[in-house]
Length: 525
Image (tube, rainbow, N blue to C red):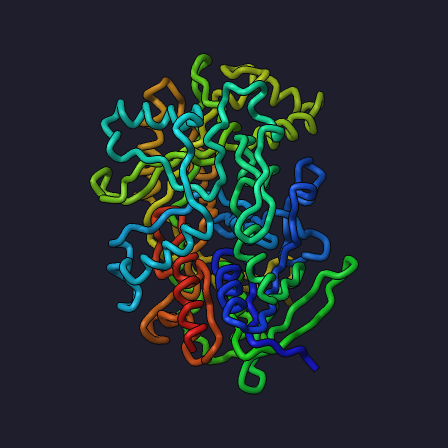
């Protein structure tokens, strides 16, 4: 007989961690299922042979840091572990523009409705921005280029979920060193440290300066009785009595062990791909939720993510591997440039990864090739000092469709697939590239548009959105304004899957605000 809970929450990202926290605070007996492991600074992957990747088909063999999916025309990168996407995001936590909610959303969801919930997320994550005396080379380069191009009024320091020490300075001896981090205990009783600009935001902050969800919302939930079970990959949901049974595979001793539990309320918060796949498998494979809307899987968006590296001449220091991964942005959300709406940010890349790759390649053919490439215009001792990675995100067409399809290699199995046509989104990508080029050329940089776009017209996103869109009825959505699945009382989706359109900015805070609101409504009922 399955164990019974008041609520089962699937996932520990911005939707799951927040919902689990608020339900537990309200006195509910909560079970939280997370497919990834618990990570600590001692277990973060740092060498090439470390567990970098998570594979949903073989989690018993590959339960690493990053879930990287390759679809036709699109690659999607997601975090895997307790804390969800907060583990590998760049700590940028910003509101969507107010007019984002004027079209495509049910009337109950407006910016004014979300404002108090944005504030709750802001307080919980202790948001701030990089202190004046700690601006990175990338921050200064972006600001200078914006001024030269007449975009100074569009420039801003982005809000970051990072704990800064106002007394920290690059003038310290060997400043990029963990020894300068100041230890403190946060409001959940978890010990953290202050930022010392190590540049590893995307691969795990070594001093816990990054306010990831496993340092705040998750421990708050656990302190109120929530039970968090890592390495539990949910397969499907089925009705059971007046509630639901959640069926999972647990990674145990290198094997997958089937298990289940029941709850009066189930919250799917496994991300755009994860929550959509669970509902697809429940409806179309297990046949346990046959009435889920036919809108399931549609209107998927990549949030127009695009990365463009630029190489600068010697003498222009970028030092992209130092400092918070992202610290500054340019607003182009008014359609006044190229007729598109998008947002530009500086984007760092951990020196650790390039150095590890170079050492692994060693003196072989690939090593010599890399060596020769670095000699051509770059500083061999510190090649990344002259490389800037520009990030863009914006309003794409949101016309992707997630569905289950047959695998070529294993036709007896059905896997998650994405239908994505780039044509309707080309204009915003081209506009982002054009601004990247303008910004680069101010200081003599040469933009290197990636091969996967220049030739193949493929994209990579770290902001997958949609698949279980919010709507007014099952005719135009999968869930209502409360996140509840149409036709299935007390079954919810609370994560990026429910967004009906892209935010054009980093979406984590909007997902968090929606989760705060939806959890508030759940606890009132």
